[in-house]
Picture (cartoon, rainbow, N blue to C red):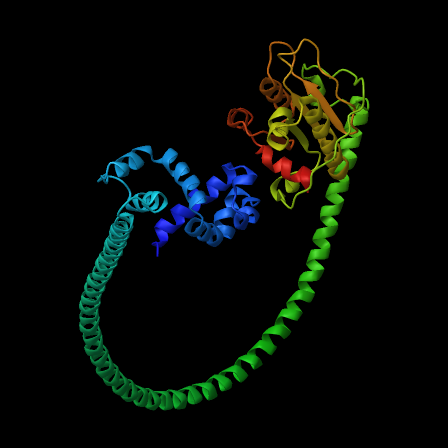
Length: 429
């Protein structure tokens, strides 16, 4: 019986030969196999091919010719009675089986032994490798167990130390608990004494309170009598003050008539040289932003009588709307100031820097807001200083600018400097 490796080689050569033979030369038993595809002949017709090779010498010789084409040197050596040392034993046995020279059975047997020896060597190699892997795993397990044992020893030592520490803490806690109980007992005794003293003090306080209530009733009666007499005196003082104010008002009106002063709407700010904006060519609409910020200081100052609000325009707009175009900034500020003027009745002047423009840009007229540009060669700071200087001493003036130089330059009695952010907050409220 052929070894499996030799049988597979012989069957493969037989399957290849079936694909090369004319139909008339194919054995009758193998004709159905010959119709299979080349890849299926070995898998589906291997048994039939092996039987045909064993029983049909002519077919076996045709297959031998195919083997001779694949292994010409091996066939030549076997014909000369020699076996190449480097040849595959399975190939040697297959060719010998097909050719069947004298002693071919010995060649097949020797090939079978060589194949078996290779199989045994391969198996031994796999077993050796498996033993080596198992030995390595065993060594690793031993090492891991040794390390685990060392870790457990350390953990046990640590737990022993923690146990000793916990015992000491428990003993200390028990001692503290005993001391706390003693302290609690002492505190209770002190509390009882304190309660007795507090009750005695409460009784004394209640007696004192009754005495004070009696004195308070007497004092309230005296105060009521005093208020009745003081009210008469205040009524007399109020009448005197009213008479004095009426006299001053009549004297002022008489002086105005005597000096023949004409009625005028001119304000000191109108006398300061400046440039008015040109008429706008198209309307610009804005929407006021809203915020919870409440600039109370500026709101209180705007309640002063006949106050004049002077605003550093670009200083405020670049604080409130830095990314908005300048034209929209001017319109938006003017409209916001118009709302403040309508609400407070304050005189409002908004100043923009016009030193770098050939002609003042347009700004729509807003009721109650005077918009001015600084003339050529002068800055908005200079115009603000002139406006403040034109006001009479004592009139309330509010200058809105975050420029510290302006605040210092206009400092005088009646002039109040406010940061731009305060006006921004008031515009948003």
